[in-house]
Image 1 (tube, rainbow, N blue to C red):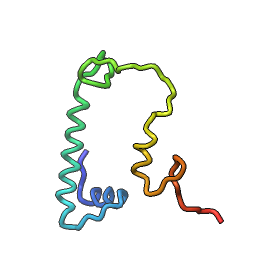
Image 2: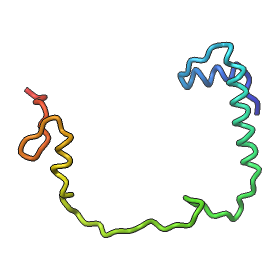
Image 3: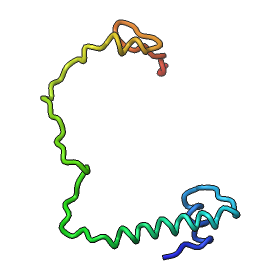
Image 4: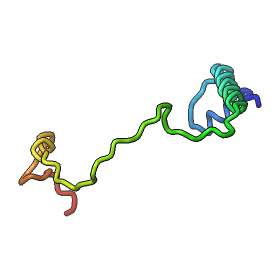
Length: 95
């Protein structure tokens, strides 16, 4: 499949990307390079290859799921522009 300048302009319009007319040939070339790379990937035989999430086999660290209060109330409220009685204070928005 080959992308010409009119197709590149249409894709740019659909993506809501402003592309000047003099930049359309370069954009079409980029699209063709991407499609060529995808065609190369489609030629790879992946029959019998298990899907994976990482290139190195690893197991995620597990911990017991325990609910705590975090014990960081002072640190969290230190970043607040206004706090009262241990809570964030915000302006009233409902009259």
